[in-house]
Image 1 (cartoon, rainbow, N blue to C red):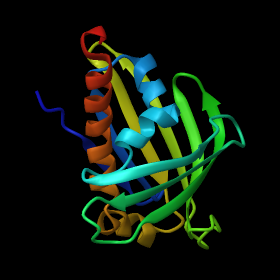
Image 2 (image 1 turned 60 degrees about the vertical axis):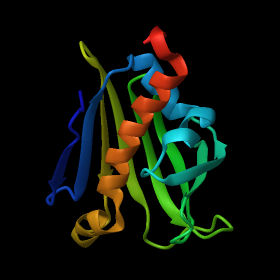
Image 3 (image 1 turned 180 degrees about the horizontal axis):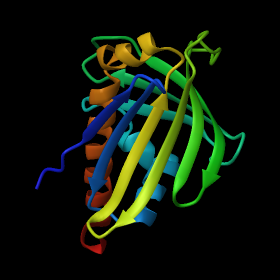
Length: 169
């Protein structure tokens, strides 16, 4: 059964919400989102590769990563997130920013991001809420590929953990 990803845009709060129920337990969803050996296998759109350079999941800890298309068409994108809040296993809050290849932040690229994990009968409801600096940035998110990227990433997370843990789910 294919799970539908729900997308919400709130122009008043300048937030994009991407929500999906995955058929994996809460604890595994948390592990999949907070361990570099997992996140490098699913973060980003299909047919893109994620490289994790640093991932220190604690308040003021840093997550540095890049995304690049597997077919070589397009540029590698570098990002740096700083965790603001970590409430295991239900909530992550971080400020994610684009950077150059030397990890210097691209001005005005910061996005306030909240990820929630809710245990439900079917598995885990994941929600990623991204607040943008402006309404224009919110509307440009789809053009940038963020909606497709988050939707693909949720699907890839579920597939990765199911393949890794198999019958234990």
